[in-house]
Image (cartoon, rainbow, N blue to C red; front, side, top):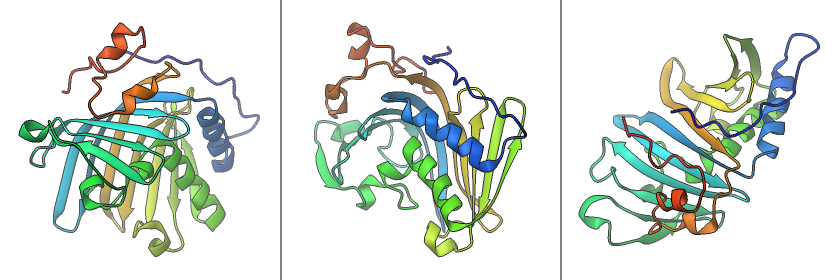
Length: 234
């Protein structure tokens, strides 16, 4: 099921696209968005710790983020819901027998981050854009490669310590919509984070009440709001 709900950006490049021109097109796309939904399949590792998750992500400006974990390799991951409301806190409830209880923690609390310590506002679309702008400002070695309907942005930073230990970031954007299709982070030659983004719904008009861990996103359909809640977990 294809859930694109946006018009392609009317952008073209007079000459071959540069890294900066593609990032600017990505920035323009993000500025046109008031809310989005997508399916994210992610895996990451930190030392001997490994995590893989399939999630529905809901986002609404100024920066409300809801993450519904459909599948995961960590105990009670499946069914876990977390909500961030741009206030430095995450409210969440676990799946399974703990689903009746919610708790609020700092966004950097290990209960609210990935195994790499990434917070809710470090994995959304704004964070991807900020990472690319960071590399531009830091003078990283950045390239853009035009593929079959995609642009691949790759950056090798000067100082991994300033980038969470990551030595290289790669972002693949759709060449028409300029929405992220995948993100990868490396420590040397080791891939330490990989995420695939799909099934976008953009500017559907998400209500604020969605960003309550006890509110069922399937109710969006009854409200006439296009949504991804019915997508199979796969």
